[in-house]
Image 1: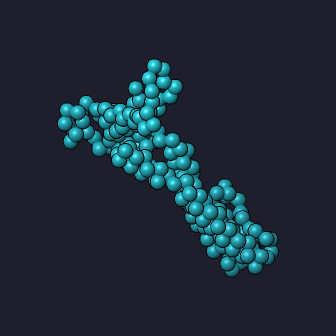
Image 2: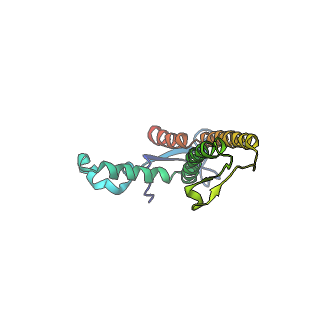
Image 3: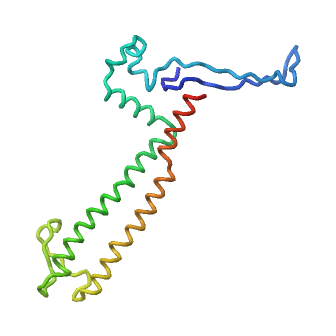
Length: 179
């Protein structure tokens, strides 16, 4: 017994090597469909659904059961984890740009010639020019630090699209519902 929801299970039976009978040219294959009695998305609310008490089912609980069902589809678990991790790179880049904006405002464009500042993440230490004594080289380096991660993030977003997590889930539901 498979606890996963699938409305039908379909397979072929092919007869070969007959003993005491003949197989016809077209009558040697049979398609078998087994109708599944599991409820959608899982059997957690089976009793309530079968008794017609659908309105009494918690919406949050139903969504959670749907997520658990989708998670069992082949390839969805690792694609989900990878997508979440890759999506965090955009947040990391945003944090990076905020810190760098503070840096170039307080250090690179500072009026004093000292060119140092104290950042909260350095435990009270000071941060100076990336290229000591050269504001222009530091500005060029900051430009690369702003631009290069955008290319990487774009490439990783393209990778996320190619993972096709949404497509796998939709295809699973379509195949299950319309087979």
